[in-house]
Image 1 (cartoon, rainbow, N blue to C red):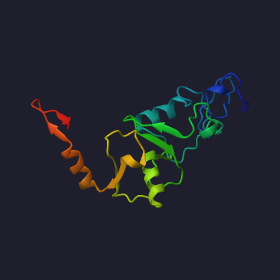
Image 2: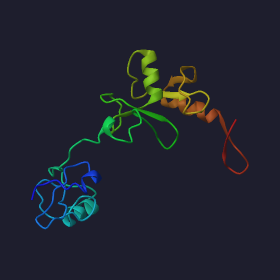
Image 3: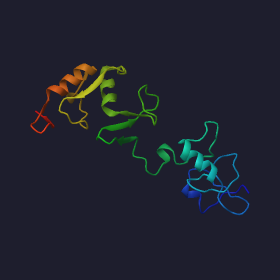
Image 4: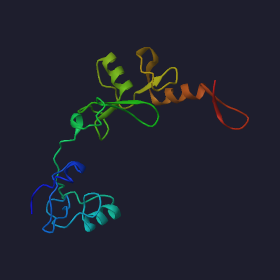
Length: 165
């Protein structure tokens, strides 16, 4: 039975299909088993849990109606990492991560220089605030110079903890 199920269709970013007995099918295109957990049948879910992924040739049935700007949680292509640094969506950038995001301070320095930064170039925040991406606060340095700068601005107190000078 290849009809869409209106009650469950809003839960998935894919076309939801039913088995003959009315249960939602597994999202793997060639599978006809009922859904067990996370839109997969028992065997595909077990394979995903044990091997951490599905085989690369397995095709998941999707429609991309909630991808990118069409997603209700879209925030204009900007997000933050766990350290407060802002990431900007820049698809096609040579140093973008797997989701197409690049740190905003890298993009600002690249615009100032008129070229992409090389892999050995590091952008240093002069005031130590990684969310302050003003050009006056940024400078380019290599890995060894960057380590020296941070080493010189810290000292070890009596308890063995690092403190900023």
